Length: 122
Image (cartoon, rainbow, N blue to C red):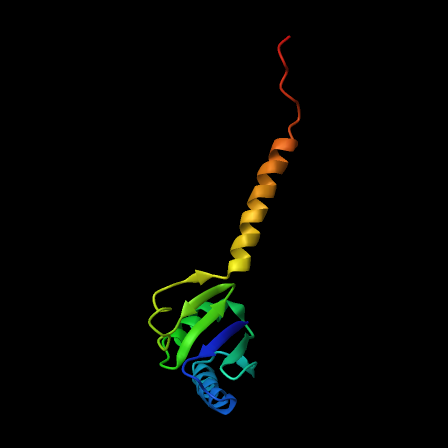
């Protein structure tokens, strides 16, 4: 499953038409995807076979009206992205925060789980 944002300020009908063209192109290339519109400029592409997700992502970000594609928590800017977003690959902030918290917990748990404590000299 991947989220796709259409660039510009499209209506829901325009988003439907643009993403329908993308879905048709993918279908012609033998990629089986389902498309659901979730906002005036966003859609979800559901994949039957997740192994093709990266190839489909590459196709979508090469489209003129694609602002970005979100796949596995990573946001990939598309050809239609504005200048501030282009060339960046950003991680969602909550994912990065969770990862840092998990690292802190694992370090503290490693310190607490020692088999023997060091002996103190008398």
